[in-house]
Image (spheres, rainbow, N blue to C red):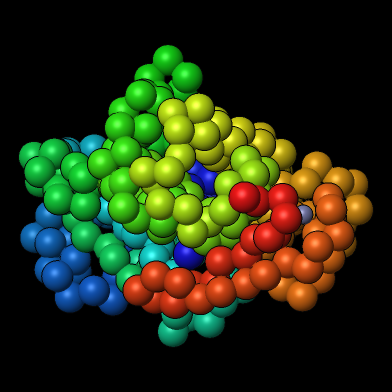
Length: 275
Ligand SMILES: [Zn+2]
């Protein structure tokens, strides 16, 4: 599952390339979306903005129409100069928006729909989102994030961090990394964590997401690997994710991995550093 910072960077790159430009071509393979686009043509509208909300991407067109997409596990947006070859097969295209200069292609995007502002305001998944970890310090409500974590007191903190209704933006890689950095065992029930520990997790998550937004170049293709360790060694980008059976970079203990949750995603942790 892509992390919130990946979607944030995608939105920013798409916004810079597309905002203020007129749509010259629009395609989609979703019948419901295509039907709306037939009745309310997208071609000829101006792209006003592209923005991320958690892991949702919203492309707003003039005339009150919004393209809402969600990447789930495998969806991705690519941005190409007009006429450039795509790096994914055309059969993976789910939605495509072109201007005279650029082409944005949503490959394997599982959710794509056109909404009015009114429908957007009532959208269940979007309305349920917890505080967005990538929002500005002025607007981010850490107290609310901690309250939403508290409300899930019997659940393991690892599962709670992934729930976008608690806080929006954490995917599976960052979940393991954040818990390592904060020194928290992923299977600890929220009830056993004090206020300071929950605040530290939220702050760590915000730092990690923000660092990945700042670091990267403004391109969507190719994607560059995530980094949480601040190590200059390209082989040492992550603390625990994907490292089961290898020694902990901090203490040398063997990194553990276990499948958890409904979709059996792997959780990685150091049994000595995370207690
Ligand atoms: Zn360790």
